[in-house]
Image (cartoon, rainbow, N blue to C red; front, side):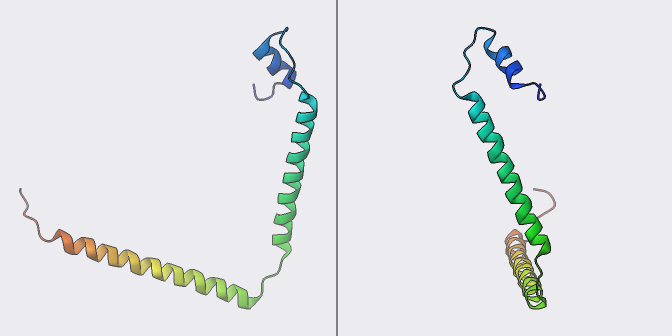
Length: 95
């Protein structure tokens, strides 16, 4: 059904005597043009990002920030684990 034409879908939904929506063709054309512009814009951004050079300084900054973020995350997980393990305490084998 995803390959059916608009006319087939309208006929299936409304039948042969159903009304045609107003300005259907213009709205469909506008939608197709808008989608084409969106795709072209995304391709342009992707192409620009692929062609853009990155300096060594910026690369080092990105690596340093990401490793600092991972270190902070690791420390917070360790502190949460220590808090949870200290609250549990020893428990008997059978309750």
